[in-house]
Length: 98
Image (cartoon, rainbow, N blue to C red; front, side):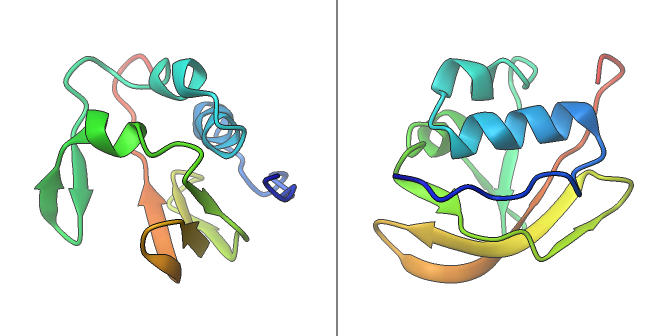
C-alpha cells in the first residue's frame, strides 16, 4: 500500500492531478495529463516516457519536501522497487492546454 502524502502544497491543478494519479498507480489517469510525444529527461538525458510510465506502482514519492516554479516542480523522497530510496524531483512543463 502506498502511504498517503499531503498534496495541499501542490497549487497547480494539472500537476497535482498527475501527481495524485502517479501515487495512486492509475496509469490511464497519469497518461491523460501528457501531450502526445511528451518528453522525459533524467539528469538532463532523454528517456523513454512510455517505459518510465510503465513503472507506475513500482515507483512513488514517499514525501514532498519542496514545491517550486509556480507549482510545477516537486522535490521529495522517492522509492523505486529497483533502485531503492533517494531524493528526486519532477519538473512539469505545461503546454498551451495546461
